[in-house]
Amino acid sequence: MSDLRFFTAPEPITLAEAARGVNADLVRGDGARLITGLAPLDTAGPGDITFLDNPKYVNQLAVTQAAACLCAARYIDQVPDTVAVLQSPEPYRAYARILADFYPAALRFAGAYDHAQDGVAATATVHSSARLEPGARIEPGAVIGEGAEIGDGTIIGANAVIGPSVAIGRDCSIAPNAVIQHALIGNGVIIHPGVMIGQDGFGFAMGAEGHLKIPQIGRVIIQDNVEIGANTTIDRGANRDTVIGEGTKIDNQVQIGHNVRIGRHCLLVSQVGISGSAQLGDFVAIGGQSGINGHVRIGDGAQIAAVSVVHGDVPPGARWGGVPARPVGDWFREIALLKRLAQKENPKKDAD
Image 1 (tube, rainbow, N blue to C red):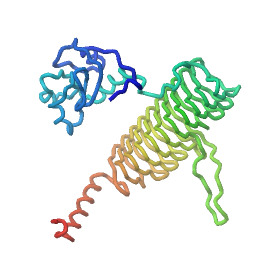
Image 2: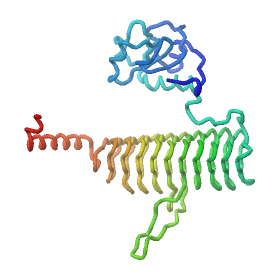
Image 3: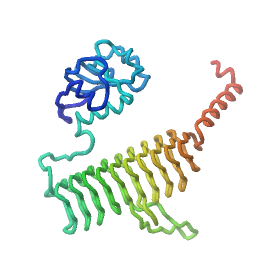
Image 4: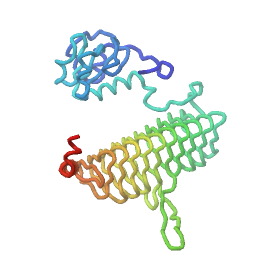
């Protein structure tokens, strides 16, 4: 539930306004009814919009106290008569859009000091050669290095460090304690607390006399509207750039090695590790705690299940999982076969 200490109460809207805003059809209910919030099926009250997208929660639909429910056409008959119906082919996305309109401050770090909307805090350190566009905001303790560029509407959070010559576009949010170096960052990028971008990659020439460190002379390129979760690390390239494509969303505690190229609108869930020089196409999704070997290619639209290890190239549109990762059909058949073999070896234990 939202807490008014952290998120201001939204202005009420009518059901009709909510429906128009997300291109949903108000198939039942009073369009003039006021909506004051949003909540899940089991906690929604008489002023809330809720949603149903996962059939796992259909049983909660029968007892919801919500004012209205966003759902697909196949669930309309199961919505209680007291609940208005907003029909949408993508109810979760529609719910997210209304939620964003109600609570825009929840979308990104908006600064810890409301009294300093623009400008440079007295305790920030900004090099004389750094270039800040009007509307850039630098919070206490932040450090902006020589020749760095910060765009209009961008917030640099407390104690963040922006290294020499780094360029950050407009309307970005750099949360406290982030460190960015050797990087060019586009517009509308969200970087959460503790993110480290542009440190040197793990590169050594091994030998009997010791391991010789290889200078990492590439950059990190982050395109527009990327979001990077807390404590994620993105190494700069060794001899080419590490690139994160437009619209990609990266969860917390993800490791991206040097020379990695990630396409547009990819999803990387928490604790994924991507080794150096791997390449991901557009719209790739990788489940949590999966590892991607170096130099592999994952095609457009491919999906990797959680806790998998990818050793070889993955075709476009494929769904792989397991250790080592392989097509999910093969993986599931192998699991079923191993289960049958185990039961055959010890039928008495299985019966117990």
